[in-house]
Image 1 (cartoon, rainbow, N blue to C red):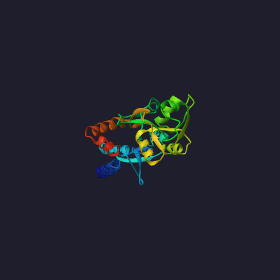
Image 2: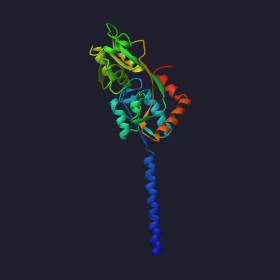
Image 3: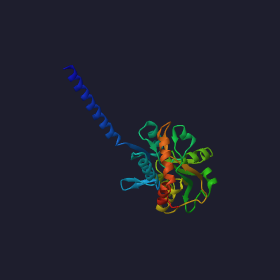
Image 4: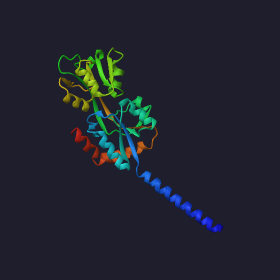
Length: 250
């Protein structure tokens, strides 16, 4: 009888283990990576209907496919992205983000996937700002927490420039069209989209700053190396360039 009971218990243990393994396997099959972004930064991330699309969204999707994950995009204010990553609410942040010393204190960054240029948007007529030097005494609109914000704050706030910070780049541009600020400093590609959408504003010829975009990940995360490996393969096979060309051109 003892032997029979032992065999029954052993069989039950095997069945329980099998069920647990099957359950775990099912959960593993539903792996997700959450990408924190600010979806008002065309052409890198923006809404097409109720879906977030753009350069960053497509590159992130390609990376997740390489790694065997399903991509979930979480839209939020730009200055909340790093907090979302450090708190674990998001797995990585991708929103036209530049590597800076300040950000590196909180997160790690992957290899760069593209370069960008910061530019200055001004009114087409009677502009107070005709060049970079004029920013020293100007009222400058920026998107809160962006490198545009960081650059103008470091360079011009102490010299008397007034920095107006907005949660969205579109809000900064709206303030410019309403005469509430003298200029807006923002990335070139979104700047071109804003100028196309709004009459009476233009981009100055002289670029403000050049920078590299990368993906932010929690400090010491294994995901950094995994993303870098996938990103390297996507660069080599031309996927990254194809996505960028789709939205920006060669």
